[in-house]
Amino acid sequence: MSQENLNPFHIAQTQFDRAADILRLEDGMRELLKHPKRQMIVSIPVKMDDGSLAVFEGYRVQHNIARGPAKGGIRYHPDVTLDEVKALAAWMTWKCATVNLPYGGGKGGVRVNPKTLSPTELERLTRRYATEIAPIIGPDRDIPAPDVYTDAQTMAWIMDTMSMFKGHTELGVVTGKPVELGGSRGRREATARGCQFTIREACRIKGLTLDEARVVVQGYGNAGSAVARLLHEDGARLIAVSDSQGGVYNPRGLDPLAVLAVKRETGSVVNFSEAEPISNEELLELECDILIPAALENQITLQNADRIKARIIAEAANGPTTPGADRILFDKGIFVIPDILANAGGVTVSYFEWVQDLYGFFWDEAEVNARLEQIMTRAFADVYREAEKHRVDMRTGAYVLAVARVAEATRVRGIFP
Image 1: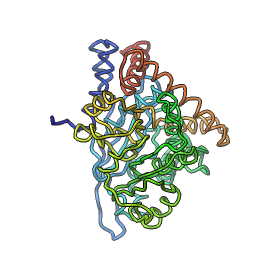
Image 2 (image 1 turned 120 degrees about the vertical axis):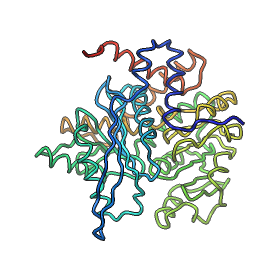
Image 3 (image 1 turned 30 degrees about the vertical axis):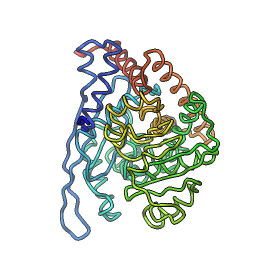
Image 4 (image 1 turned 90 degrees about the horizontal axis):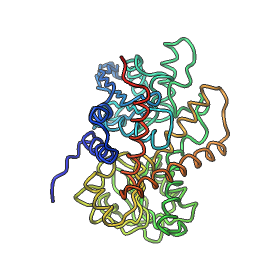
């Protein structure tokens, strides 16, 4: 078995190159679009509760802003690296272009294990990080959002910090905020709901009915647990779920709300008693109709792709499948809904939130969900058309669509000076 380069930025560039080759993108444009526009590395000193001083490293990367302000989440994780953030920022560029939002791509991260910090330490870390990246973020420049181990409270702290600098409340500086502070209704479930809409479209193409379809979810966080519940409401049968500690499996079906209750109470799905234990590796290889990777990058690789038995893979996580695995899955006839389409519901409703903040006029949840479904189903059709036209997998179809849009915006704008 040949070895893969699992560096996320290398993977992001490999995915871009394939689309650029199909588009016959000129060398200069190719180089311009491959590299981030701006990268910031910051030191984040935090006074801990015991009076000691700890220093963390943080990043904010703006990959491209040809089509509008940079947009992308902030993650807190002990394994965050600059290359990972660069890759995530690039994926945000292509994700926003895939669903045709007027945004570029950005991403942020802090190398920290937030589970080891108290709430007050986490707040001080967040406010200092916001202060350090303040020169490059703003509602018309770069709009952060939640990501791994960050949430609405994190965004509220950032919004408040930036508002203190401005001297007035700046609602649009971040999205994913609490509804009480300018957040959008429907935002919490937006990633999962967008994934649900694309899965419905994929099922139509594959001739699969969601009623009783067997679903496996790797990563039972906000997105994974929500999409499990939504598909369960569609009639699908959830047979296995997992988190960072392991998974559980029951071929007769799992109650997604009961599993979530156990996770919230005990900290992990592995404590759910009405199922058999299963490892994350075994879970990915279960025979099922729909597999939803909703954890971290590089879960389906050259090492295990040939053992994947799902009919449809919907990438609720960013970068779960490597380029080498993509080729194997495509040859096996497995229909992959790529991350830059499948999980674009989150950034789409973030866009709705930003628009509502700028206008000070807010929509009810039914309107948010209806607008989201319209955008996601249209984007799915656009991507599927490109994939069929070029006889490629859905990821490459999405990249062809997205790269063409960003390249055209860049050409029309021109290069200054």
